Image (tube, rainbow, N blue to C red; front, side):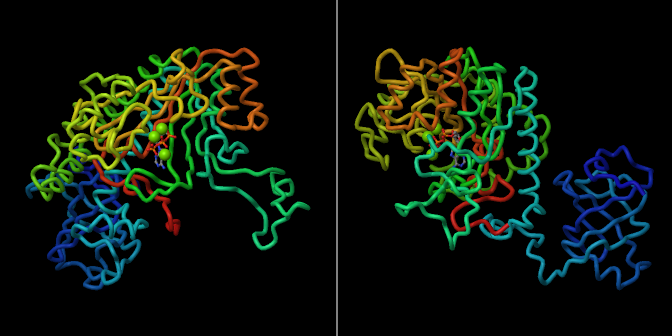
Length: 477
Ligand code: ATP
Ligand code: MG
Ligand code: MG
Ligand code: MG
């Protein structure tokens, strides 16, 4: 028979009708009450078992983690905290679960424990909520950009360009590692590899995205990116998803306006579509905050923080202004920063970004016009000769969530910068062609999807907001 999802059942509209519900047992109390969950919501439906008239062998198999199917007529619940329940007419065990061996017990597990059991952590309320919110955010990003006429352009995962990688790339090869072809001079002979050249996993789809934008006007790519960096932080993964819009005829302000509107739109979508999940995560975070010493607790709850982000303009300041603030900050003067800000030119660390957002402005910040020496070669050079039209968006609890810029569309400036930095122009001939033929002002940015999910869910570790985290020494499944 047709199966009904628990989320729909809990609306109460099925009272009086017979339904079949399928899911996994979260708890079984007094041989009588099954808490059943199917992942459509964090809330369980209560199944009431008539244990006196149920085969004891069947009762024994109703264990935590087992998959079951139940048919019965929905009734309004007499118990507190639940709208409806189902007295079971029939119960079928679809998949047994040995309660001695099942790792996910009806108690609060630590996030570390669940990370080690990432294959089963989907079956907890915390991870159910996180991945439903993640789903909403992904869909809302497409919605936002599609509503504005952007073309979803799939940039390649395997690329030949390592212009940006700076040693952070994962190489791709189909060589037999025990028998790698060498040239006469003893170097790896990439010509004999699958693609006839050296290739790597993409670190960003931007350069290819620019080709699309300079023809289709507004494009975005939304795919996995790979960085073999030291991702032993709570903000870095070796495999993460990035949204990279790229727009022709946009300047830096247009770029920032789009990014701010997009962030607000998707956060709002999560608040609307995942009310219960966010209330659950809000509560979860509140309990976690209570464990912290008073002076380390965040002033705002998760829901307040999300609302706050929606109802305030992001602060927009230049890198130069930010350096002045940081240099004169109490944190810098009292040497509270691990990296002290001596003056203009310093690269900002996440502690500085978070200081600006959390302590100084208490709002999301869009920082623009960074020194050219700490940014990439393709960013548009400003007239001062020192800075580029870059923008980073900084979020509370996260630091950098977006990195973007207006791109250098002038061939001579671009080539000159590539020469200065020793970036091989011949390898990027296809990229430079866009500047040779019908170049135009354009801009774009990269939004780290997991950093967005981190912010919206209030989680503390990026490994907990992606279904299958990839980090050093971790790629089991
Ligand atoms: P960070 O300074 O935090 O290392 P980045 O400046 O190296 O980031 P960009 O190259 O600007 O990162 O990439 C664009 C966006 O991708 C970043 O703003 C961030 O949101 C996200 N991002 C970058 N590296 C990672 C990573 N290793 N794991 C998850 N997200 C990342
Ligand atoms: Mg980085
Ligand atoms: Mg950065
Ligand atoms: Mg960046």
